[in-house]
Every structure is written in C-alpha cells, then in structure tokens.
Length: 225
Image (tube, rainbow, N blue to C red; front, side):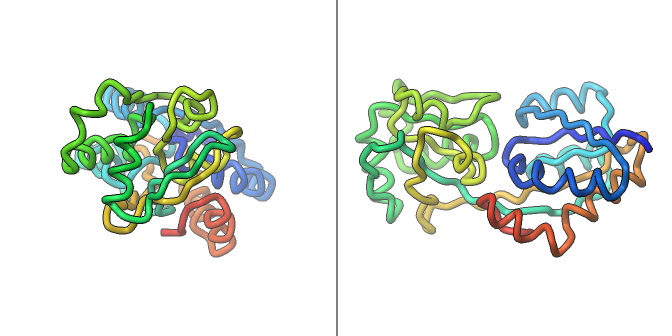
C-alpha cells in the first residue's frame, strides 16, 4: 500500500490527528504528515515540492489551483477566530467589536499568527484605527500556536483559530470574536496536480468528509463545511 504524503496547516490538526488513524487501519495506507505554516507551504509548493494532498485555507488553495499546482477542492471545515488569555488571568469583555477594541488597547501584549487569522487581524486593527497604537506590543508568531505566547505570560491576549487555541496548555479561551468582527475561514483539501497516489488521496478526502467525521470536527472547535 502506498504512503500518502499530506502537507497541511495546523488549524485542522486536532481533528485530522483523530480522524487519520481509523483511515490507516481500515485501508492499510500510511499517511505521512508535513505540518507547514501557510506562508511556507505556498512557497514550497510554488517552488516545485510534490505531495499527494494539500490542506489549507480555501483562499490559499484557490491560489494554488489557479497556478495549476492543485486540482479540485473539497471543503472540510469552517473555523472562527478566538481570543485566549493565560490560565487564571482576568477575561476581558469581547462581546462586541467596540469592547474588543478596548480590550486590545488595554492589553500589554498581543499575539497572533502569520496564518489566515493573523492576516485578518492586521486588517481589522487597521480598520479599527489602532494599528499604530498597538504596533510595539504585537508579536506575530510562525510555526507555533499564538496561545503559547500567552501561556508564557509574554502576551495578555492571543488570537488564532479557535481550533488552534483549544489544545494549548496554560491558556483559557475567552471566546470567539464577536459576530460583528468575526471572520470565518474555510479549510479545504486539494489533490496535488502531480500526486503520486491520487486514488489513495481521494479516499482520504472521502474519509475526512464522511458523516462520522462531523462529530470529531465539532469537538475540536470547528464546524463541518
């Protein structure tokens, strides 16, 4: 049985790690996972690296599809952005966009990632007119969850996909961003145009979108797409 090579971003990690072992047992396939931050993933794939399956934000996947690097797209899950604090720290009011703005301005440190949530937050803080005011207090991280910065006490607020904040030890989720400023990201799978094992990769996508996968996806802080 061939080994399926999958390159994917961390947002779908927790659900994926629970869903893949039953697939391996049922099919006899082995799945090799390459966890790569979105920015690096785009560079590596556009640079010619070949895998069987790519899982990342729908917008980024569309970019790869237009470039002829991946073929097709299957939406797997939807995820909102959340806010976390160090475990035991006071939880600020984030019930509205205005409340969130006050919480961010009051925070001694703010952490977010280079992924889709971080890209959105940069625009959000610019739209709120506070980007310059908080510039010196912002820490943008790559390759590690933003929540780890809050867990170490190096940021009072950590922003990332809810699914990426939930498994981080030493933090507590304040909640998702309020509806008036929330951004929902769809995470999708696409076969690499030169996938060595396309049939096996398609079987994995079918498993990840099966009705039984929905409960696992919800448990891990996302919604089935």
